[in-house]
Length: 260
Image 1 (cartoon, one colour):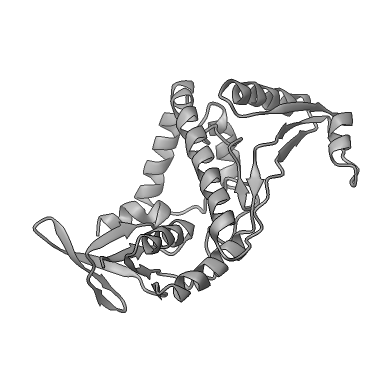
Image 2 (image 1 turned 135 degrees about the vertical axis):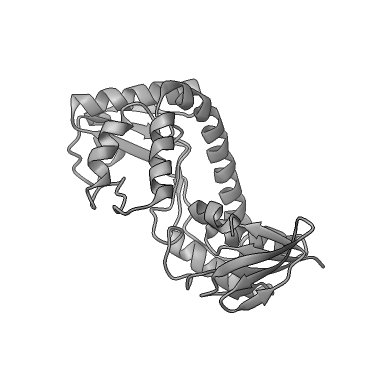
């Protein structure tokens, strides 16, 4: 039985542990937090093939600068002196162009469709419910400016095989008869889905533990012992761990962890 260490206990790390356990491996998760907070818990649970346009897109620079310093915006970045943050800002600026968007759309679309297929499979095979539903996503707009943007997105979506239906104000109201909708119109993406992330994460943790997965919380990786270009062990604040294979699942921190 192969001993595999998974660094990071978010949804990617937990999912990795799930599939590795299914394949017969012995898995240990090393998580620097307590698994009670983080992006995998604090999100809207949206499984959205409709979101196939990258954030780094034309027009986002001017919006981004306004949003970055607004703590209530969807693009808030806490101001701090950081070389990595400056590098990220430069790369974001460099890629906010049509050429990058056109190249990224097919990959993001396929990744989203694959992600949705995997969640469909998990909803059928896992012995617990995590609120997975396929009810679509409705994007509403109240101004002519946003209407133009949403209609352009709908046109691109249909071109790439992501179904999008443009609705009038009356059609939006028919779709949502139980609430009074104040909107100029909307775009409905019937292929989108959603789930309850808190249920998925907490119940997946309990399920993995029942299957023999070891989860070490408050366990921060300090560095790696490397010999002959192979990682021999992982040094953490809780001690040293040796594995046959290691999976890095630390999201946006993967680069800094790998450099250790």
